[in-house]
Length: 321
Image (tube, rainbow, N blue to C red; front, side, top):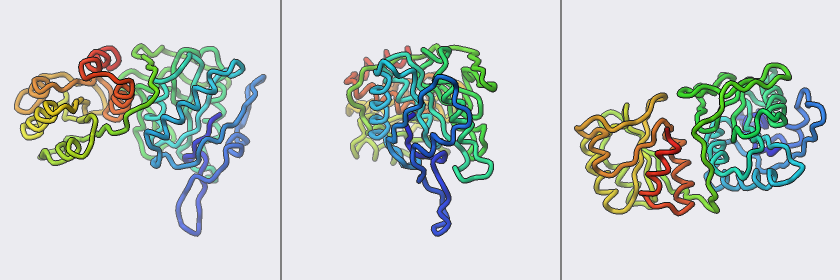
């Protein structure tokens, strides 16, 4: 069990009127309600932060720690306790970089450790049960919250505070925990792992909004971005001003990728007038049904591997759906 902080390890500090990660890993482990038989839980206190403070380099180091444990012969699986703000991104980074098929389960809480209705202990109990189950072998990194577990590629946080906040909109959950029973409903089809010794954190995500201009995307290109992910309108559209800027940015050697700001569906080049067809002609690579944050994680990994834009284009065709 690797602990990283988050709400599951947080308490309210009355003097400062805020909630902060302050519960040690062993204390988080002690909250487990019903440890499955023959399971020996070892605690690795990796870091103790709220997940809005997580960075790509820290998340990459976390994945290296996960892989160190997975490589041990006596390790059946790994559970990671993590804050919910960025859990889906850390989990997807892990999914892309795992060294073997042993289970890796991310979990956390929406309510702090001192909340009378805290959800962390049950989530952690279920995560331990899932990580110890042979049914979880080969699923890749998953996120488990409120009895449901999801593929890291597909899951997203859909509500700010509800305990059932995590969903997989396009493909649906992988399965659920019912008491001490693990039930798998489907297997992840769009998984691939990479042997990356580093990642590139300088990948910027820019969201299209009504009437936006090219200032943000030009600034990203001028200030050191190694790639840009555009979260476009609908099917993956921009506007004429932004499309022109993207064409110049790609000519300048910075690859640009497009996702949709919609919560479901995939991007396709259909529209002109600054839309997807114009972006395709400019050299943009379309990211299938990956969300903007997930596409950014994937591009960070592919750049870390050292892929060229054309090589990344081929990889996205296989991974993005």
